[in-house]
Image (cartoon, rainbow, N blue to C red; front, side, top):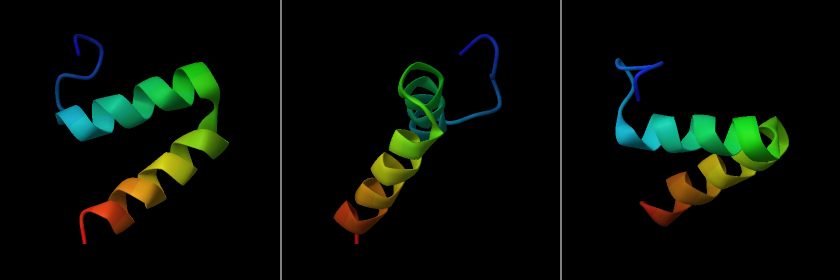
Length: 38
C-alpha cells in the first residue's frame, strides 16, 4: 500500500498476485473476478 497509495484494494491484490505468482496468473484471476461480479 505504501508503494502504490493511489491504487484501490482490488488493484493492490492484483499487483500482489502478479509479483508473487506471475502476470499470467494475475490476468486469469482478474478475468475470474470480473466474471464473478457480473
